[in-house]
Each structure stands twice: as C-alpha cells, then as structure tokens.
Length: 257
Image 1 (cartoon, one colour):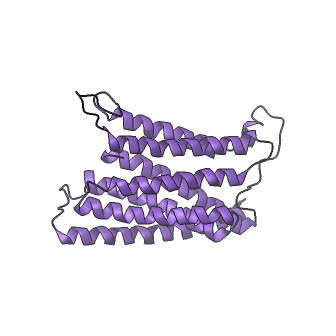
Image 2 (tube, helix red, strand yellow):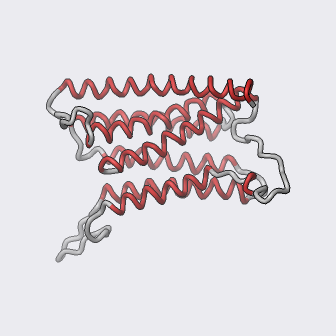
Image 3 (spheres, rainbow, N blue to C red):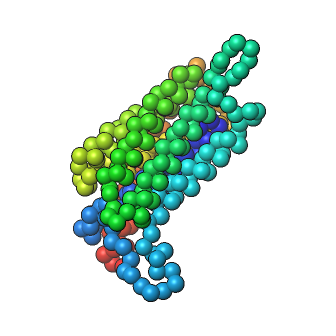
C-alpha cells in the first residue's frame, strides 16, 4: 500500500465494506431479521429473475482484490521477482509489494468463499464465510506490524494507530466465530472496518498529499500529537456515521418502504 493510491483504494474498500455491515446490522435491529440471513427478493418469472437472487458482496470482494493487485503491479518498475540472482547473493526484493499482494489474496479468497457459500451451495454456510474473513484479518495484522519496520515519526505513529484498530477488528471477527448472530459484535465489526478504512485514507493524505502542501516534519513533536488527535476525530466521525446510518435506515424501513 505504498503511495497515495495504495492507501486510498484499500481504505475505500474497507470503509465501504464496513458501511455495508452497518446497513445490515441497522436493518436487523429495525426489522428483527437475522443479521446474516437477509430475505431474498421473491421469485419472479421475468428475464432478470435469477439475477435478483444473487448475493453480490463476494463478487465485489473479488473485483476489488483484482483492482488493488493491478494497481500495485502497475507501480512496480522493473522485473517483479521474489529473490534476486546477483552473483552468489540471494536477496528478497519488493518485500512490501509482496506483503500487499498477500493481503489482497486474502480478500480474493474471502470473496470466493462468499460466492460459493451464498450462491452455489444448497445451503449457505455462514461459518465458512466468517472463518475466511477471520483468516484474512489475522493475516492483515502481522503484515501491518512488519510494515512498520522502516517507519519513523509521523508515518510510524499513524501506522501504530492503524494497527491498534486492526487488532481490535481481529478480536471482534474471532469472537464472532463463537457468537455469529450477536448484534453487538456486528456493530463493532462495522465500526472497526470503517475506522480502519477511514484512517488508511487519512494516512495517504497525511504522507503524500498534505492539505497544507508541506510535508509533515518527523522531528516536530506537535505533528506526532496532532496525528493522534486526528485519529480521535476519526473515531468520533465513525460513531456519528453509525448513528446516521441507523437513523436513515429507521426512516427508510418504517416510513418509506
């Protein structure tokens, strides 16, 4: 996730995925539906009847993984290899790019599991979907921890805060394996997905396109303090957004639909 686009696109993917979960849990709370099993559209005999029965979330995950991987490969200059072969040396190359592609591969596999479970199996296996999701997050965390090895100053502080959000998200998705229909866990999952995505986008702007037009100074303690302050603002913003999503869903399902 190097460069501005490398932070923007994954951040948007995680943010909108969290927003989707916020809509799911809001609808479940308002309409008293099981949060994992939203009702399908009624069968019809029209031309597009079969398409109305398809769950598209897994397909969107797969498409997002391909777009993110293509963007990562597009920014690589030279031959993309794992190990160099210079004389007697064997050095690992493009270590961060390989980390990014490993992460995108987990998104792709999670999307494949969702497609198979939701659209191909005779009976949906939600535990399989949640297991794939938990596996992806468990891989995301160590990749992000190792990602901070060469960081310092503002970049290091911003990624430490990002890692904290990912760690809490990992705890939630693991707990969900034992309590899959607990709405409190779904609320926290939606919150931390949006929090991770939103903060990842913020990191891209801070490091590569600061609003002031000047690079953040790593030796200025005020900058480090403001990074943490911005993170707290993101927490408050996501909390307000969750309330807004629930309020809009309440108006939609109770008075409009």
